[in-house]
Amino acid sequence: MVGRMVARGYDPEFARRCFDQIKGFGSYGFPESHAASFAKLVYISSFLKRWYPAAFACALLNSQPMGFYAPAQIVREAEENGGVEPRAIDVNFSRWYNGLEGVSESSSYHERLSQEDGKEPFALRLGFCQIDGFKEDWGKVIAEAREEGEFRDVEELMRRASLPARAMRLLADADAFRSLGLDRREALWAVRRLPDDKALPLFAAAQARELGQEPAMALPAMPLAEHIVTDYQTVRLSLKGHPMQLLRPQFRREGILSCRETDAKRDGAFARTAGIVLVRQRPGNGNAIFVTLEDETGITNVVIWARLFERFRREVMGARLMLVEGRLQKSPEGVIHLMAQRIIDRSADLLALSDTHRAEMRPVVDELKNPPPPRHRHPRNVRIMPKSRDFH
Image (cartoon, rainbow, N blue to C red):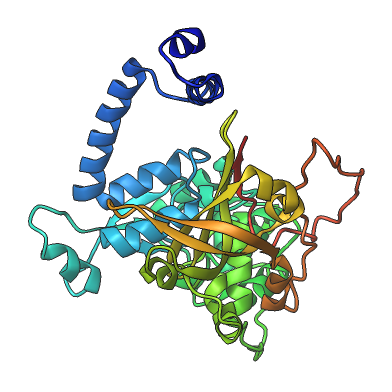
């Protein structure tokens, strides 16, 4: 190619650059057969997302881990753009997998969907599979035991489903006892009174209560920030809010824009935007790194050129909460990218969300250049945010 271009009068250096660009694309570009099958999948997926948004979101969640999209992003997209009502994990309603439930006609979600002809209103019920560390067998026995009737309290649940103490603690941590009249803190208090394992044979045979009645304790209300942090720790998403909405007053004082405000700015405008890191991508021989940030208003797609990446490698690879300064680039088709000029790791701000969950902020380590030292971590030093999806 280079020789024939030079023979036709092109500059050799220009011909070499053209060849290098084609070679770079060839390492990750789509062949025609792949493109045709991908186009068909996109068409079918788009149809399902348009007319069956609850089923589409449910299927994506049940197929995790997959693709670039985290569970929190899938649920948010289904709610905001698909009109789907997400419902929390609950011992009296959830099954192992995420599922669909009917929506009452008085629901605001039903009203939104009824305005679109042909779209059937369904709610998305999160399943026990979303709980980190929860076993499939536990989820199935809960659903089977529930066929005899709803559970009335935590002791009855433990006895009828023969659940170990660990399963009960995970359910309480995931705030799955709301239908029993218990919020997360009350549930954690209640399950710690239960036996360390299955019910004693004598009481199980008599179907009697093992625990005596205790006077109600006026526990302090759990702050919203702690609820959201714990939701992310246990089920990787929260229906109560987004971490960035809690930090928004602080960032607004610093002049840092939300993702929605960033998108609204004109082409070429300077912007400072911060968000939770969802995805980091670097195509094989590509000259750019692509980062997706999320806040309570949406997402911002960031482009980091390779020369800038070398300067900010630690921040790019390690940040869970990233602040990016740069200029917007908008295409005529409406594709928006923030072209990074400076990157700041603001992960430490996440520690302010909870006083009782000051987990160690373990950065994503660039293991090629900085291998991590061996470490021993206590099980309670859990993450504050789930890891991003990183593709290299």
